[in-house]
Image 1 (cartoon, rainbow, N blue to C red):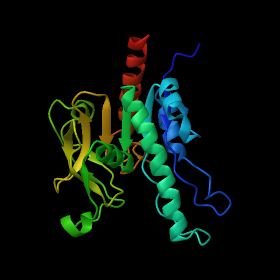
Image 2 (image 1 turned 90 degrees about the vertical axis):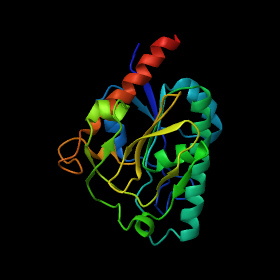
Image 3 (image 1 turned 120 degrees about the horizontal axis):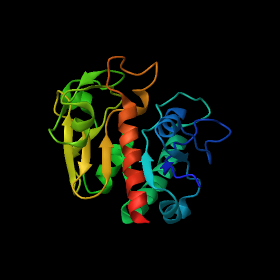
Length: 237
């Protein structure tokens, strides 16, 4: 029997004129990052099965949103419908995994989603409030001593940045563990549950073409999350 932990990965709606009503997709970077670091990736397909997925899988990754792509066949209204469908599905998954107290990791939008689900709020326009554009840029972050991210990456690692939203008020139990030079939240962990959030994209910080080139090793994040899932899986037996 394969003893590797099963890691469920949320999906994004397809921006394709054949599938935008009901399709779903996942950047292969997430699947590769899970597989290479010791997990078995699994994509959920049916929202009504959220509780079953939480029993089946050992951990959940809520990924970042796909970058807006101009597709002539997809209207702004349809993009809103797709986004709402994904949001509802991910909220059902998140609720089920939290109820099961299984590990959850949110990346970029997934990080924001966890925070809001737990009662937090977002700053929805960093360019206006901070005077910076967090898109395709690399920068240092400052990590809290003793936090998970500090233990993995040290005090001031370099990360990427692909977002214009950020955590404003932390949700219940959320402890901010890393901040950008402007003071925006870059990572968090929950005070009690195995819940972790990263505003940057560790799946893009691995391999030969990692972004940024001088950034920290994203594999370390996935390896640790999968280790936590595996450890809790064994303990639960």
